[in-house]
Image 1: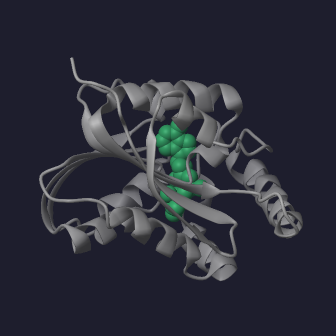
Image 2: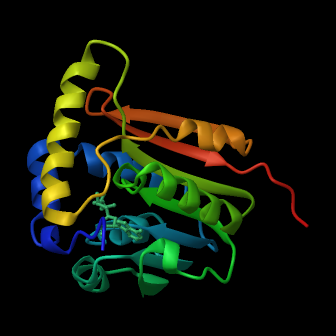
Length: 213
Ligand SMILES: C[S@@+](CC[C@H](N)C(=O)[O-])C[C@H]1O[C@@H](n2cnc3c(N)ncnc32)[C@H](O)[C@@H]1O
């Protein structure tokens, strides 16, 4: 199965911190701040699940979360997290194979789309877009390659990651798809964004502008 991080589950967080320090954590903390009580939240590709503890720190109870992860080992680690009083439904599936039966106030996709080839980006974006409530928030973070001098070292690190995780976890792409056009095409409003790790990581808060009914 492509993009499955089973083989990396035991060292993923350690390696991420070794290479990026706290940047990937801070990028997701920036997103989590926008979560408030009483919401239905979909998390796709949450990895080892530390984000569940970050969410509980911001919102200790009253959330209904659906947590979809393709890696059984990542899911196993996630289930051991302290989610506070929040209700979490853990789903072992690739998001494309998961029949979403409700709509969400918030969708969180942390470092998910950078694993996907363009066809999968397109289909998963569509699937999630249809599952987000009118006025809902889409919180995402991903890597980016800037079009300036920094783009040179960013491209080198990115290709090294693609080579390594392509080999170990069958990550299917070697090319980063820029997500902005997808959100623009569906008239999302960019509420806020912040970059980390000297521009290599970007966190964005989008609001859906679709109408209900
Ligand atoms: C790069 S890791 C990021 C993990 C976590 N978000 C973090 O930042 O620490 C991507 C995660 O997405 C999961 N994943 C990849 N494709 C997926 C899919 N189609 N559906 C659900 N999860 C997926 C992988 O198993 C992996 O845990």
